[in-house]
Image 1 (cartoon, rainbow, N blue to C red):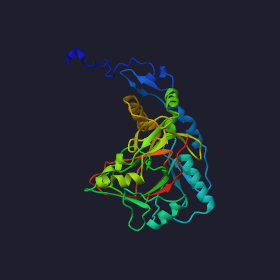
Image 2 (image 1 turned 30 degrees about the horizontal axis):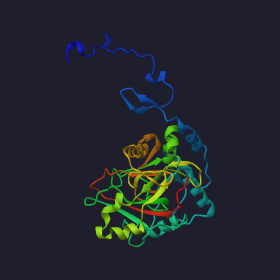
Image 3 (image 1 turned 60 degrees about the vertical axis):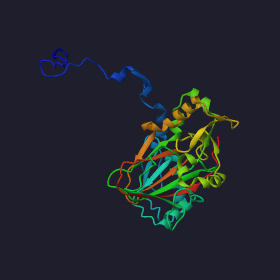
Image 4 (image 1 turned 90 degrees about the vertical axis):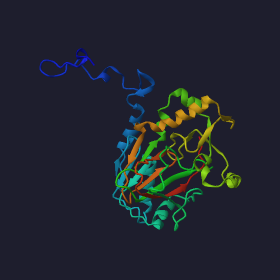
Length: 337
């Protein structure tokens, strides 16, 4: 850089300012393309405002709720979920789950038995065929990570969408957490759907998606067992856009862990480059930070998420430290439009 190219301050030592207003003042409050990279959009996610306002107005009788994200996530305080909840408490916790999509609790020293007992209040529990459980409670999936076992859950996904009837929800407890790192992030898939352009919404309205356990768990068993396992867990098809059974909200229901490809309304596979790009675009909606909330774990913290309404992502930034979690998953109903 030559001397003539350097920034020269004014005589009083300050930089000359040419702008008269914030650069955003001349823009409408909406998403706009970034000039240098037209595929990148900036600006407010205005469609979140209505849901934010609705959540702001909620009041609860049996606990207080501290909001975490714009349209999802709340820490519930003042309720002990280890003790057996009375019916009114149980109903309000369930309503809070549907409202916030993921709810968090602190200082809940579950035993495996009390963890399972709490989860079973919400329905029958799954036993996961590809992840070992707690030795005393097979319904508890145990995620034990350390220097010899890395964490590979750091991708956006709904749980077990490869099942004909995926989980309705999951309750995850921190048994042991690292000093730093290992947070779990959640994404509001109703907001992700609502943020799509009308053209994309019309295009995917009657599309289906094919889900396959092999994408994530194909390396769990020897090849000579493939036919046996495939017979138990065949490819399944779910709508790309499902409707929540309790709230009626439309939800984007595809993820990279388990969604193989798209299919038309008649079940015909769509595998060309165009549809591969569309699937990637839909999965990428979870990357928008405005749709997310983030939970920092402590021992005996609990996260309870609606597996239809959110995707989650376990940050893998703590290796080689130890992180131990246990999860109970609640059997749901078949996703539908």
